Length: 285
Image 1 (cartoon, rainbow, N blue to C red):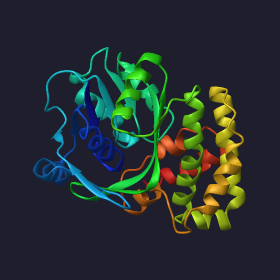
Image 2 (image 1 turned 90 degrees about the vertical axis):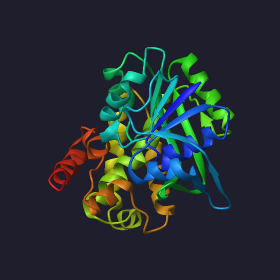
Image 3 (image 1 turned 180 degrees about the vertical axis):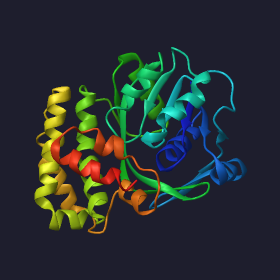
Image 4 (image 1 turned 180 degrees about the horizontal axis):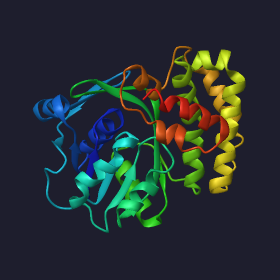
């Protein structure tokens, strides 16, 4: 199978490197110094107990010919549409598309753009670009979660099996997506709103965090018929256990004056408290 990984940040870089260690035909898409360094020296993965490198075919978007069997979008949610448009000529109705961007509506976005096969998907991993050409993965956390079309799901499962990467194909993929989304959406919003860490939010704004989590659970029930009410307490428990100064990528993006995933993580949930916080955060962009 011919596989494209669009975006070689913490998620895409680790996936592309893992696929490149196999016999799979993998092309990564990146830009700038990161692309130059990977072309020169391959991509390097730094884990807690080991380091490894692998050569990787890497290009800029619009720089290859022919169609891919699978395209994994590992970009920020606000870059998903443009990324698709820039690789659309390499996609046909048989291509399998997946997005590992934050949010629960990325598959809907891709379906609105393409007649290709689209799977619902999300990923659990702690990783980031340490420097050009180098991906730092922290801890043992890793699981790719995907599902939808049965035949396409099995094809993608084969990719992860070849790369010896953990994956899950839950029967109710939407429920699985919301189980990840509920924590990220709530705490990305609150850490950004208060400009404080997850630990601070848990300690000083517990009631608001609980209310926001309950809103997201109610939204999932109304929109998708999914009951994730049990995730409210789990999310609070997680917040109590992470290092006190831990924050979220959206909070860091606000601090650094970068573009944020506000629309997907806050604006998408049409509930009173979330919309109040979203409107205020919109003024800070």
